[in-house]
Amino acid sequence: MKKRTLWTALAVTFVVVAVVGPFTGQNQSAGDIVIGIIGCLAIAALFWWLRGRTDPEARFQARRKAPVATTVRLPDDYTSIDIETTGLDTQNDRIVELGAIRVRNGRPSGSFSQLVNPNVPIPEKTTEITGITANDVIGHPGTVQALASFAAFIGDDILLGHNIRRFDLPMIQAELARNGLPPLQNQTLDTLPLAQSIFPGERNRLVDLIRRLDIAQTESHRAADDALQTAEVYEKLKTL
Image (cartoon, rainbow, N blue to C red; front, side):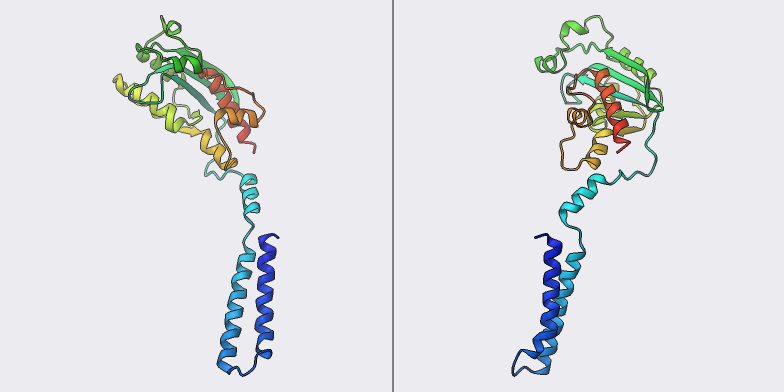
């Protein structure tokens, strides 16, 4: 039985008790009868109020179907970015690849891809995930030069990324600070909370989203490719 039906039945039951009850008892004082009627009607009112609440299942479906509440229109012009690193620690790990896709009117219009020589060993785990080895970064720009080229490409665009506010941007800002460079001032747009608002209770990693939205089946874990997939995810999320 759905909760709405249950609350309705209970509310009606207590209304009936309030109406019929005084005529079924014996040797009841007028005060007891009044108190009994008031009590039954109060309980009936409570169940009727509960009846008016939407079932949890319906609330869940409503959240999934509801459009994302925004105070401004989601932009069509931005630059989607992604990075590959030696780890997740902003203080001790380093960027080994920068990728960016410039988007205008919802369509890619330019790309940036740069391996970075971090001048530190590249862990086996990083190589397992990205395929990037120590030999791959030999002869490529160091962190300062790579970040300068990256900053020139993104300009003052809004930066789009998946978990950009908790990972990509903090990692980039840490690298900039470590090398005495000014921080980025760009606005950011994060597809992770956007996806979480549309698909609550579901896994919303980039790989989950590209599969769910029929973009691809695998995440390449290379910066420019992941930046492109993030842009494709964002464009599809805008239509939901």
